[in-house]
Length: 388
Image (tube, rainbow, N blue to C red):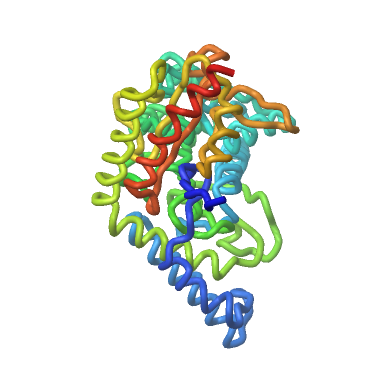
């Protein structure tokens, strides 16, 4: 039996490691990676690597190096921003007990906000439109002087829809005294992102979504913004995140970001062409398909959320896997029980359509041949699943 040609169309879940990131990590994986807080020579070398990576990332993003906090990834960065920011805000103003977030947020933000209920906070989920973008009436309701923190995703992880109104929303919320956080996990490395231009106070991203390693993330904290740490201990990261730094992963993150940004425009155009070709081919070859997340600010060039009328998404996903295609479902599985995507439901899709939706996401390793392979197998598999 011939080996299947593998097509990886799940870059929004994680990306393959870039060679530049691996090379940056290699010395710290093969040699002595000492504790960066140690005072001996190996420790000082590790500290130099961490601080060098911090300086490179700061320069790339146009921020101050002391504003960057290294974490274990996007989930921790989101939790530190939401929980740490809200707690610090309430410490300064006890009446600020609300944490607002859009219905299109990643679970890392949503669950962090909901967890604060145990501490007397009021989580407030703001409604979104059909593209997953916050509605103005919901944003206005959050700016009443009680909100400690507002979190708005910069680009949706499921549909790739970009929020082009972040700066305006942030300005209004900050004028009302709230901190503003944006989850930029899917956006950084794929589209231009400058924290200072967005007008937010906190911005989170991670390495493994842009060709870096798992295990290293970043939270940008605007100078002067107070943050209550999730982890205490050795006082690392200027007292904002205790724990020994992951030297190898941090070095790899910096190298991956540098590579991604050096090719940002060229790669963005290439991937947009491939994505559009994929969607156009689907419309021509498969009846009853619809692309989601088409908002006024456009989408990431890497995302294609597709609803296939009259099919079960999980069944199609399994069929694709057997053909050597890695994609993802529009639903999340909890304890083995498929649940419809709450983000797509919030966008107004009926549950039956949500369960018929798959996400195809592309990245730096995606080729034209892979897209052609997708268009070769999908019409046949969709027809088979519909017939069944």
